[in-house]
Image (cartoon, rainbow, N blue to C red; front, side, top):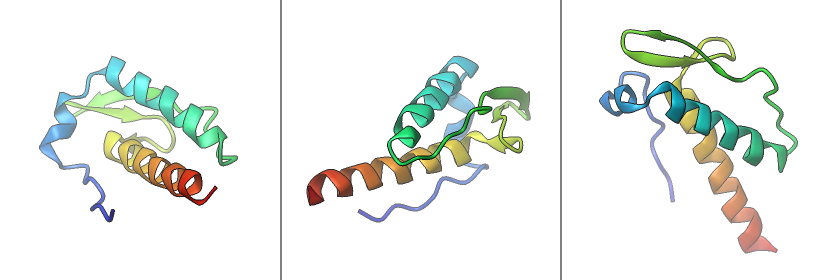
Length: 82
């Protein structure tokens, strides 16, 4: 399934709280580890314009969601191929 990346300006981003983002960062750590991708310093940083930023180069939550989507897709493809 081909999906369009989420943009930082997507209005759905504003609904994510800091706790939501922390849970997503935890999922990123867990799913990324399977592929050798480590994000040891990824955590929430601050809020700008009502959006929570993630600390790996002050990325917006959309970057985190897009990374998770890629990892989920890769995990699905990997499990289908085995």
